[in-house]
Image 1 (cartoon, rainbow, N blue to C red):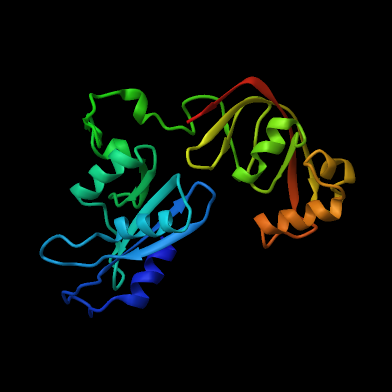
Image 2: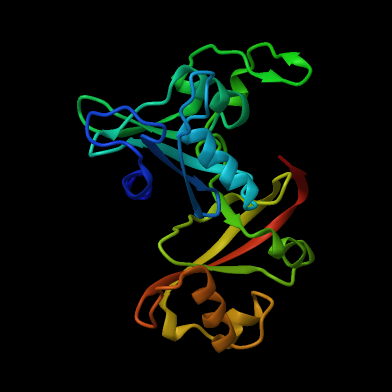
Length: 250
C-alpha cells in the first residue's frame, strides 16, 4: 500500500477534489517478493487502470506469478477496490492472486476469484466452464509451498542442493511443494526432513555445501543477495529437504 501511495502522490496531475488523467496508483507483489508500481492513464475510451499498468510493468521486468495487488487514490483517498474490468482480468489471468480491498473494518485481502463468484475464465480458445479447482488458493490447497529462484532448479533436481536457508520465511516438517518461479512454474514434490534455527553467524561450511556452495562465508554472501538487511545476529531457518520421485509443472 505504501508503494502505491508514494507512486501516485509523486506522479498525480490533479489537485485535491480535481479531475485528472493520473489519479490512482497501484502496486503488485510478485511471487519472488519484488514489487512493481503503476499509475492509471484515464481516457474516455477506456484508458488502463493503475492495476493493469502495474501488472504490465511486472511482466515487463520478468515477473510471472503474482502474490497480491492494491490500488490507492491520490491525496490520501486510501485503498480503492478494483473496477469490474480489473476483476475480470484478475480472474482470467491471476485467479489466486490476493487483492487488497477496503471494508468498513479497514483494508483486507481476498482471493481475486472471490471478487467474482462463479465467474467463467476466458482464454484465447473461448470461455471455459466453471472449474472450482482453478480458484483454489495455492498456498492452502495442498502441502506447504517453499519458493525458489529458478536458477536453483537443476541443483535441487540433481541433489547438489538439499538445504535452503530462510529468514522470516518459516517451513514445517513433512510434505512440501518446492515451487520454482520460472515460466511456466515448476513444482517438485518434496519432504522437509529437518529444520534448524541458528544465527547467521553460526552457519557452517557443511550448511553451505548442502546448498551447492563451498564455505559459510559464501553462503552468507548469497543470503545478503536475497535479504539485503540481514545481519549476523539475525536468526534463520536451515531447512533440509529431499525431493520425491514425481515431478511436475504447474
